[in-house]
Amino acid sequence: MSDPAADFPYSLAAPPEYAGPLPEGADVAIIGGGIIGICTALFLARAGLRPVVLEKGRVAAEQSSRNWGWIRTQGRDPAELPIAMEARRLWAELARQSGEDIGLRQSPVTYLARKARELEDFAEFAALAKAHGLDTRLLDAAETRAFMPGMSRGYLGAMTTPSDMRAEPWLAVRALARLAVREGAVIREHCAARGLDMAAGRVAGVWTEAGLLRADAVLVAGGAWSSLLLRAHGVTIPQLAVRATVAATVPLPLVHDGAATDEHIAFRRRQDGGYTLAPGGLARLALGPDALRHARHYLPALRASPFGIGYGPAAPAGYPDGWRTPRRWEMDEQSPFERMRILDPLPEARRVRSMTAAFGRLYPALGEVKLHKAWAGMIDAMPDIVPVVDHVEGLPGLTVATGMSAHGFGIGPGFGRVTADLIRGAASVHDLTRFRLSRFSDGSRLELGPAL
Image (tube, rainbow, N blue to C red; front, side):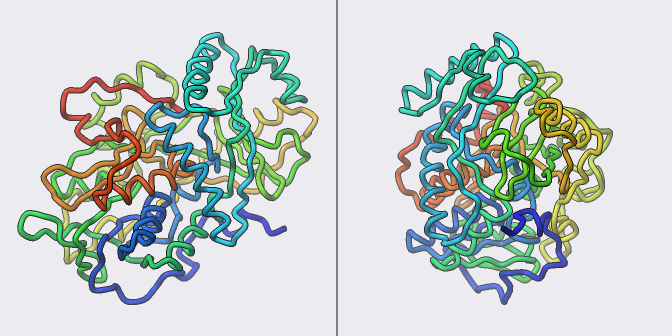
């Protein structure tokens, strides 16, 4: 079996898979070739429209390929849960239609509890799951030991959802991109969007480094870069980019065939027989102008989990919230998006050591846990840990789908279909009120979603 991580992380050394001249026009221009942009393009093409995806680097080269690979319904925000359930169904359909092995497997997602408060949270979600017909189960201490044998730690209990899934992100999103192209979407890599073209008070296209792409509708799905592009057009969105470190082990004996997490370690079985490891929910925020500007929006999350995030002194040069990253530029000059084709942060060596040791302690029978490689990604985070999926008031023709807050990969096909309907003006089968952009400016009290 080929190693699913062999060509990861992506680099610009690989030639673009989607090259060629820019089309003169599109029905919808999509800024960002990650999971949300690609899935939206697929469903727009299926609806008979001509979407063009503009990707500054390579498809899925940033967070869409750097995540944990969980496809979960478990633990979702109540507003997200129906979309996550639809996404899980769509993953099975799209994997079959792609004709490629993306490592998609049904395997349980399990949360492990060491504290009574965690069990209370599990019970609350289990009630929600039952109302939606989801097969989430609560386990007591003895059932947890039997369900996940071989662990050195004892737990008060667990919550697990047997019907959840996993897939290999670096394979899956590119497979969906090829499927979207076969169905009529156009993708252009190494083609940064510099900003919006406006005419008669509405969006008329996108200025790119290759020239103007005319379009009646534009979607900003740029992940960690979305806020920077929107700010250049007077749209403020309190999105921050936080760094998350991940690692892949070499193939190991099977200890658990699904995904699980406690407060120290998160892991899932991979297609090649290894495990993807990450710290249990911990990410790192490098302080920059936007972090200070939007701090008030994040106070509720900080109070709820003061140690859930680490802080760095300054965002690195060229990053979306770097101190010297330009906030304004002309459409005929190089933009920050061209200067940073692929956002490729260094993994935190200390985190890599600690999470590898934590996995080894949890399963001592494995002996020494050896790593194949480690990497990091920048998560587009929102203050309430749920995304923005909405039209932009005051800029007709502009839609935003960003701030997936580390949930984007698993829920991507669901939000892609929802966003395609939103752009087309089709009635949604889901209530999207929770994801409105105006919740940060209309005086609403922010309700925190689940952190994982």
